[in-house]
Image (cartoon, rainbow, N blue to C red; front, side):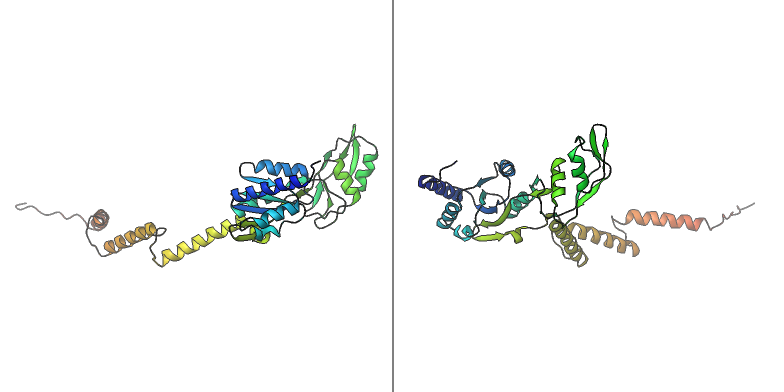
Length: 287
């Protein structure tokens, strides 16, 4: 166990201050109830992109309070927190942390965020006490050969309901990990600006879709209003060319652009006229 003596605290304080000076983005994350194994996975995935630092809360708060503009985020460093030092955009960092969640077992009393179901199939469990346990969780089971089989899919806990002891035990036996947990970024400091979680938590796909829709709307408005800009100029010139050519053809104006179309039209009209004119035999003189 690490001895948190004065020397250790001073070393930790200096370490945090050095990281503050090195990275432009500082985030504070809540790691309460976050398994150590999953924490190491996040740390590994962020390797090369960010440094995740965990220390005594008082040490972290002191370092943040005493260094540059970081005092503003010191109050967000509460018990069981981690500090993330990075160059990533705050929204990118938040989305990355949010996406990288791990699966954990169901605990008795935990509220299901979505339906928890158990699929039909061979459990690999031998007949015995497990048979009663699975039935207690509401599963339809039977002994098939040397193991217990679940005969049909079953939702054992609906979204919003608490996990019962019987269900928690059954899910553990079946090695089903229905809950997802992750680090919770509380706030991110960029320069003098602090972004809280409710600001950072955006649906990137929806935002992208909204941007695309806004771009299409703006383009259509500019095009229909004949507003020339880098986005519309090419199509506006093409439309102007087509309109000018159509006007010239309608007015029988002969030029290098309309000549081909006018000659084709004249030829077509000549053929149409000739089809309605009978051949006239001119008598020869002296006949």
